[in-house]
Image (cartoon, rainbow, N blue to C red; front, side, top):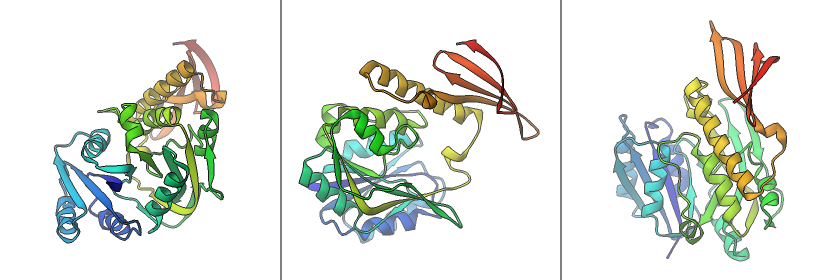
Length: 286
C-alpha cells in the first residue's frame, strides 16, 4: 500500500505551483502518490501539472470543472490509495522530510492524525503560527483541540490522517462551502482516537493578497460565520468546550469609502453592533 497520498487542489496558481510541486517531488519518504486535482484552471496551471506528470510516475492529475476547494479535495480523497492522506494548498510548500517524519511518528504511535508546525510566509516576513517542540500524543478531545489551537487555526494541511479513520467516519469536506476546514477539523479531532505532534518540520503557508481567506467581502465573512456556527453546534452536541471569546465573531461589515462604519458580530443567539467596528451600540436576539 502507498504510505501517503498527497492531495493538491489546483486553481489558477501558475505563479506558485512549481514551488509547491518541487517541495513534493523532493520528499524523503518513499512510496508516496501526489494527486493534483485541476479544478477548472483557466491559466497555465495544467501545463505545469502535465510537465511534472510526465517526469514523475507518482504524480496523477484529475481534471474537473471548477467546483471549489472542497470538491477538489473530495475528488482527491476518493482517488487516494495511501494508508495516510495529506493535503497541501498549491501556493504553499513544505520541508523535504515533512511527510517522512509525520508518517513515521503516526506509525510509531498508531495515531489517526499527526501534526506539524506552521510558518506563515509574507513577502518580506515570516511568523510561526504553530510551533511544536516535542513529540507528544493526545487522546482527549480538549487536549487535541488545545494542541492544534482550534478554533483559531483550523488548518487541515499541516497534518496527515489515517485514511481508514476518515473512511470509517465518513469524513469529507462540505461541497460548495468556503472555510470548509473549520467543519472538517472539529470532526476529525473529535472522531480520531489520538493525535501526535511532530517537531522540527514545517508547513510554509504563503499569504497572498487575493487569497480566499484574505478577501474581506461580506460574502466571505458570512461564509466563515456559517462554518463557525456549524462547528459550535457540533461542539455543543458532543460536549466540546470552547472559551466564550471564540464564540463572538463577525458576520457583516458596513463600509463607507473603505472606512468601517458598522461591524455586526454574533455571540451565541444574539447580534452585537459596533460603531466604527469597536464602539458597542446595541444588541438584538437572532
